[in-house]
Amino acid sequence: MLLTQRPSEAPTSAAHDRIYRTVRTRIMHGQMLPGEALTLRGIAKEFDVSMTPAREALRRLVSEGALSLSSSGRVSTPELSNDRIEELAAIRALLEPELSARALPRAHPALIDRMEVINGTVAEAVAHRDPVAYIRANLEFHRTLYLRAQAPAMLALAETVWLQLGPTMRALYGRLRRTDPPRHHKLIIAALKAGDEPGLRLAVRADVTQGLRLIAG
Image (tube, rainbow, N blue to C red):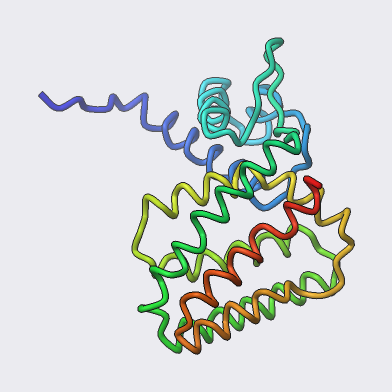
């Protein structure tokens, strides 16, 4: 027998999903710094909902590693140790070159043109020293390519890592005081145009790990 949702459950479910997606995006794009606390009361007030959907949304984000839950019940964005940063960088170095290689046979000229446009947005964000715009555009650059891999489970794993790293990437951006766009993006685009899988793997691996290894080192 199919389980049907009672009418009273639908608004709560919709509110939970709205909170989850909004807060998840904030974390992934570095709109929150490491160690920044969230409260049920604050979330419920901001989204004009009861405690229940707020609690469920935060619980879901904790389960994904986007938020940390202390023994005292405090919920905050994670403050990653150097070992944890190194581990997540290693995961990116394994997953993302593989995604890019799988996407290469489907990297048609329109896709490459789109990536060049996004890279222009990345450069603008750097020029304006806007860390959130930079992180958002940088992830869009990579996601646009990886979607062509047609490997949804692998991409979902990559996005989970991005989610855990969002606040740390924001802190890293401030530390590096970057004034030039990522040079490896041009190498990625060049490798796509040339159909060069080894060069593509190398450029992607360098791009996704260089900054993280600097902060971990």
